[in-house]
Image (cartoon, rainbow, N blue to C red):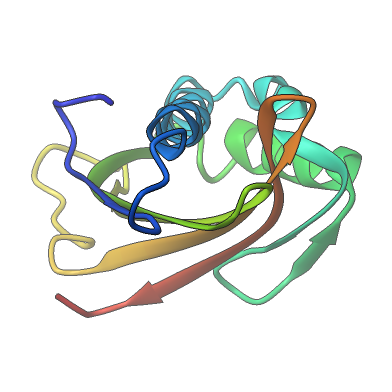
Length: 150
């Protein structure tokens, strides 16, 4: 697992194969963060299932990989072109051998200026449902929530 960012993993006792799955899920989350921060939304294509759903922070439901990628591409060439996410922690919970929940807690840099601290106390929770497809974990559901929490 990536030790530079905290990860909290919850697994069923005695299931040793789950550590590999947790590492692979963390790799998906790192790839999501890298795509966001590089503004290369085309890279999301390999992270989502074809029929995935993504509910963004304002409640708009994006259905299907192409709509998720296309909408993020639009936002990342306009209002999010300088915005970066910074991981606070990742919580991974294996639900079954083929389903997992990952909560990515981040702060979002608004990219306006070094003096800007608009998002200083606001954390974002990106809740992802992942499914295992032919040994690869893919995002099939995501919900972005903005909230003040610990």
